[in-house]
Length: 204
Image (tube, rainbow, N blue to C red; front, side, top):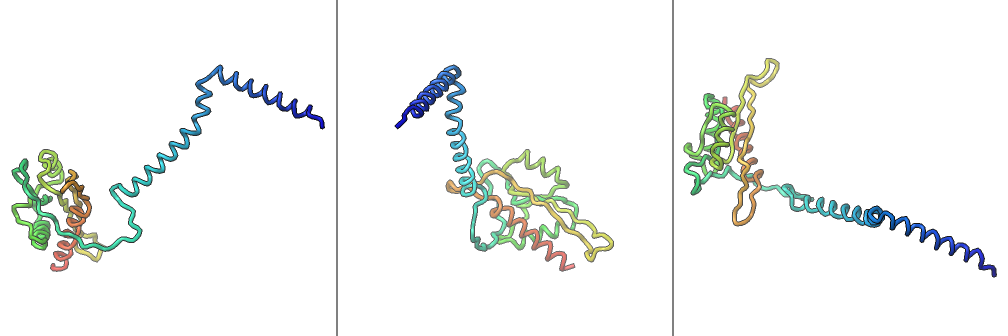
């Protein structure tokens, strides 16, 4: 059996490996980069995957395959704290509209428990509300910014009722558990306003 081709292949392989080794030793940084770059790439993919999994399970919104209906809670009454001499359940604007005053009255009376008048405050404009909430932090849970206008001539409606809910985004923590703003404040305020507007508009 002729082993000459095999010996030739082995010698060529040795020379090629020696050549590659010498080239690698001339620039060790690039050589190490070539070796570890695949490892770093795989590691970054693993970290990215874990970040996506944690975001889906522990983020502000949880993935719920089968959600169950839950009752909408009433607007929580704002409670005075040791550092807050006054606390308003919510504030609203404008303060010169009888329609808005009537809607706010219905919101307060239909809440459980009813919201006292001393726990609600009116402002002339949304700019005043912004300034108040900025200068008096943690003194109100949220604000209604109402906008009531005449309907266009071709509309079947007489009036158009719209509003914006603005909340205090300070984190609530009760017994070490964070409180989600949406079910605790936003949804109750939205539901109460929709109900009051519907009752008021249909009673005219």
